[in-house]
Structures are given as C-alpha cells and as structure tokens.
Length: 350
Image 1 (cartoon, one colour):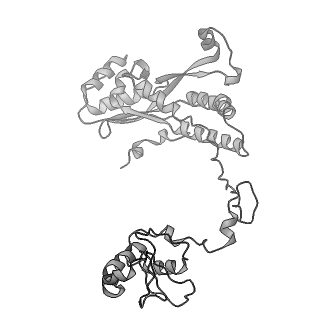
Image 2: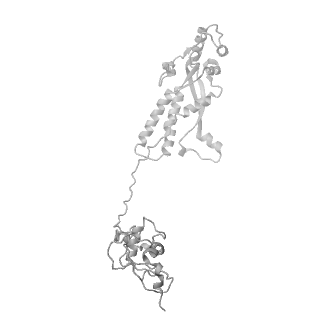
Image 3: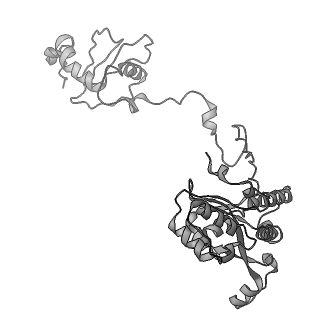
C-alpha cells in the first residue's frame, strides 16, 4: 500500500485542521511514556496503549499545539527596491525578514511507518504565497528575457506553487515527538529543521523561457563552372581538349625492355628519323650492307645504328630498345645472317 494512503483527510490540500490520527503499538515505547509525563501538567495514568493514545491525541489536538519546523530568511522587497548600504548588517536589517514555518501534527504512526507527519499552518502558507507573488515572481521576471507568453507562464508558475505549498506535508521519524513541550507545542531537533527548509525552498521553481527555435541555415549555392570569380576554379586548358597532349614516348619508357611495353616501342621507332637517333660509332665509316629481316622494311645497320625508313607505312611488329638491338646484332643476327665472319670484305679501303 502506498504511504500516501496512510495520511488522514486533514493532510490534504486546503483541508481544515482536525485532530491527528494516532496509531500506537500494543507495547508502548518507553521514550513516549517519558515524553507524555513530562509535558502533561495534570498527572494522568499511562498504564496501557489506549491511555497513551488518548493522552497523545488530546495533547496534539490543542489549539496551542503548534510546532516550529524552521526559520527562513526572505527579502522584504524585490531586488531592485532593496536598500544599498556599505554596511552589510544594515542591509540585512532593512532588507530581510525572518519567517517562522509553523505546523501542526496530522498523523502519528508507531506501528507500520514509525513516523509523524506535519502540515503547515494557514498563516505560514499565506506568508509564503505572498512572498512568491509579490517578490519572487518579480525578481525572476526581471532576470529573464521577454517573450510573448511570459506573463501567462508567470501566472501558471504561481498557481503551481500555491497548489504545492498547500499539499506540502513533512514526514519524519516518530522520535521527533521527543521535542514535544507543554500544551502540545514543540520544535524539531537533531538537524531536522534544515531538511524542512530545503524541502520548502525546493518548491520555488525557476522561470524557464521557451527553447530557441531551430532556424534553417541557408547555405550559398556553389559557383558553376561558367561563373566568373576571383577564384578561377576551372582552368582553360582543362576545358579546351578532352584528350591529353602528346608526349614523347622515349622520355617515359623505362631503360630495360619488357613484354608489356613492346607495342609502344614499335610505334616509337617507326616515327624516329635518322637525325633523331645518335648512337656512338666504334669503327670508321664503311659500306652499309643490307639484310633480309621479316620484321623490317629496308633495315640498316651502321655500327649499332638501327632505324626504319620513315616512308614505311606497313604495320610494324614489336621492336625492342636500341640496347637490345645491339645485342641481337652481335648474337642472333651478326653471326647467323649478318655475316660477321666475312668482316674482311668490309675492311675500309685506304
């Protein structure tokens, strides 16, 4: 069962005061017996649980049975109207007031919850409501920016405080009854006053303005290639021709031949002229014999100089680099079909 259902109807908001609901165990605690004997002027028999219950109920139902829960220091006026002085003691005396939070007992349970419940008196509730309306609301309104529904929000905040302070019930351990004095009055002991003060000040909620609206950021459209600007994003060379400029193949071909680059070698040597190829000549000039080679049309060899006639337009097969041709001339071509064994016939005539 929820604990809130154990409270009597007199603990509800805006309810009038009624005798407290007292529930005792069959065996009364010794501290309660000692407290009742100390506070009662008239000696009464306290030999059973019903006698303790009757005595405690009558004591707490008296009109003088008002408990002081705590004291709260609050400003007398809004912050803009407070007196300014170099002496902080003078400011405290003229600008602040001490309000006693008084309450009466509405419930005592020494069986299930072992607690006692207090409800604020109408005078204490009225003083807190006036402070919230005349001072607190003005201060929080001055410290927040204005929006269209600010006044309605302030009114709603005050109405919620009125409901909360009238529903406020302070519940603590039943040992708080040890602070009971004559005529049913009393005050909280063992630091419980700070708990009450913290609970009451927690009812003063701040004024929260509405969250800022999300605004879509308009981003500028990117410049098109045809747009003119200082950035000059597109170069004219990139738009002039979709094909890259021709590059001399012999400048980018590696020095050693490979099977993957043989096609580029054949096209390169087909376009070279006699004047573009300069190879060292190990011997003086001599006649240029011809030899039949299926891979060339009118091929010539002059001490390692090889080239194809520029007038030849027939498809040319793979042609290796000049360094490889020199090896072929000395190995596969020279000794087999070129005729290096007849070198005496090519001796220059002096």
